Length: 526
Image (cartoon, rainbow, N blue to C red; front, top):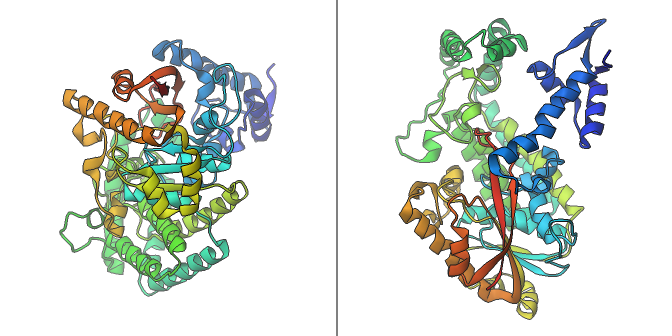
């Protein structure tokens, strides 16, 4: 007979078996969604050890075989970093702000640190070296370089990306930052208290709970939907329509304005309820009054992260945005009727605390090195001059030893519009819109002309930036090169590919969960 485990015992068993932390919440998820059957005894929730073992054998061990069958035997599973839990791949300042298309810090660390293994047989960077990321994005390379005692320079055509990257590595007076966060929170609470939002939302939540308890009992409803006993899309839409009169009645009762009067095409006018937009403006005006430049910038990051989470959309469409949602709706993600947000307060408070915590964590790891992200076009920027104008002490190091190499993830062809993903912040902060300078953006597609433009764009970046590198440089570029463009890019840049590492990408935020890989190309002088 198979051993019976409590949820706590199951989490401990699974953690030992998988050699990584498996929480009680992870085990509860498997039970609630029917991944592993329950075995009840004396009213306690118990699990058969054999059932848990079969699940992990099927979903974790065999996963490598399934992925290699789809993607090829040359798949390097070591670089999947599957042993890391999500909190480790988004550690400290790496999650100061959401960003599509960033790579995980463990991948950067793998190539920048001083370890060797069966695949990485030599060390490429040493303490005190300078590394360049000409497609800096959200600043992952800058942060990991700091952790490892390396200096780093980032370049990005997006002003907002540069703000994110520089904010992650900046040094702050955390006491002063907390004081400003608390001050702004008090102003926001006072503003809200003078309106009827709180009473409205409290009654709405009460009505939603009663309604969901009746029509979407958990976990029974999710199990029935998963088994096909209920068509949740049809059922959910019917019940959302049934709840609509209750919602409309509350809107009338509290005389709440949720639609903005403006008819402009701006992102802020389209994707935010009026109650939310009013609160955004209140917080932004308070941030403008902050005198210290660094504090003003990190507060802007907190506000940007807040308003991203408060867009008038469904939970499942947060990353894609289809149509604005201004009323309660059936949410497939949560298996019940959910509502749009009518206030930013809870998210502002949550992200203020989270930012302070993450900055403090990074302070315990940071080294006394220089990191800076420059805003500009990597195809033509003069790195030395820009660093000299911004950070003269860093320039003296740069001038004496030059840059050892590059660690970067160039934009993928036709995958993301990097400016549009943060359009809400461009709208609010008034950053210059440099979308025309993006290489391989989504709106240009993946046709022949787009591919030629992409090859030229990436090779132009390499030709420009290699002027600032040491003679025997090492360049690591992370790319999903399904169009086989990088061998030609290497030739156009006067370089050669000396190695390539094909890794599975396990933790993608997109809805497509099909096996997916990317290649890390190692370039050297030709």
